[in-house]
Length: 420
Image (cartoon, rainbow, N blue to C red; front, top):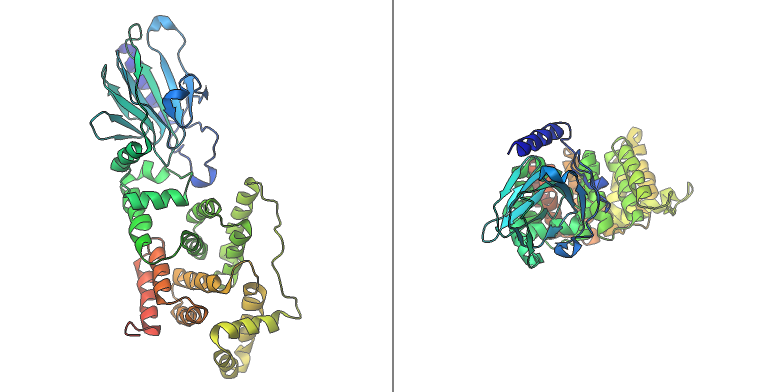
């Protein structure tokens, strides 16, 4: 007991100096992560056959006369050991990330740094990482002279999913969607604010994604461009991970940023462009990417105006030019040559996608109701109907909040009344 108290005191002191050491989305890698003051150690080859997923083992004590073997075990996301028991019992002390412990016949218990599990002799159990977080714990062997392990069957995917959902608090739909977006997800919010992680996760990846028939690619793109419009770097970095994990190319990722410039402004886009470049270079993507420009200084006005008219109608654009005061006509020319000629003629994204992205930017910015209404009409003209636009607004709701969402819905109902 004295040795145990000493170890507990040491762990407590270590944790005080190593809080906030969880992984974030843009830094999550396949290499083992040092989540605490304790070393990660080597690949857990000796016991690998009793684990699903990869783990690492660092033996921390060497003096056998103390009769208190202590090891640090690190699990990659989703990794867990088989059902097993110890004749002499065991102590677990969570030191990093988010994990789970479950006894046979009982609900799983979520583990965060500083939590202790006392495992009585011969209790059948398993422990490991959460699906969305790395995890480390100290394993302290009790009664080592007589303690023997009995390894049993693996914790299969169905049992693991059920156990982690009980404490992960995500519905099956939300968990599935979340993992599709983020194969290497960040467990930081769940570790620091589990109640908020539950509410937001179920709403953003469960309820709102049940509305409409947008595919995952479009959901990611409009969420990405919304984060750009609001200049929210943390959320934008998450969408970068989701985009690349779901087949959205580096060219398309960059194009979303370029597309946002004439609507959200370079001041909001520039720093996120730097974040994107660093991200792509880290993924081995050489920069600059292949040029997407299809206009020159001589053709940008002509091609931009033609595209503008194809979306909004020649009559509408001609009227804008005719009714513009002379001292404001340059804005109409800028729209044609710059907004449409320089940016929207680029082939990396098609017209339907661009109009949906524009709508998403304007809704996210707020205070752009006149422009929102104009681009609702543009979306209709290129084939994005009210159902698609409502689905897009619903997708954005968890990120932009209710006031901007309801303003967007009001614009939709004004331009496209429900009886039509």
